[in-house]
Length: 331
Image 1 (cartoon, helix red, strand yellow):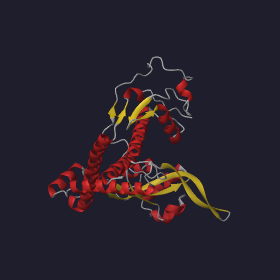
Image 2: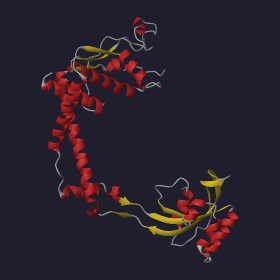
Image 3: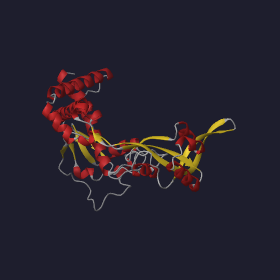
Image 4: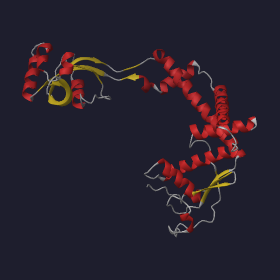
């Protein structure tokens, strides 16, 4: 295999394996003479028996690669290998694109090509794409960095957080009594032994830093909302909150999970206001993301360019009219 042919074959495989579905679409054939959609052939037609998968229009040609036909039966067989549930129309089109790319590789790579040659071809293709992409990527200047940072400022916002703690008591009446005691000055630590939450009792009832956009499952939205509603550090929620959580308890000498329900008294410990991190604090992250975007775009452009070259070397065509007749039913 010549160097140029090896590179082309490797690019086919790279495109097929790493970027299925992208790049310019194969050329479309003129609609062939197929059965009219208003009167489809019967399931017992001759072509249905030749396909191991029960499918209508089994021998209907829907694509041609380097002079070789791809039929409805080929697509149905591959769909059967991939899923038991059948494929929607968009997934069928993607599957046809995959088969066309594989056939393109087969057309460029002779049957005698060894697995070792395939590895070399893949390495050549990857080196070629990387070389083109690297040549196209430039380091952004300060003005470009600042523009990108302003356009993505939301990515560098730290939302407001509230540090809170709770007491979990068995009844609402007990929780209201505890809340009143806290407001009257009773130390939180004096009431903590009565809490039903053994884990957080060891941490003085600490719930950590709570955020409205990331609610811990065992804390619950109602507790987070109650904590954010408090105006000052040390304030206690007016109403106890009904909660349920899983705790590890000792049962006959062994720790076992147990679901516990109760009423939570929520107290605010501190509030950290929202802030946007300044550019100088995140400049390295911004540069990294910009370079990653430029690199991905450059690789996509190189892959698309080589896809055009491949279409010139391997004749590929998909019949849109025939493709509409493809069905990939489940098992």
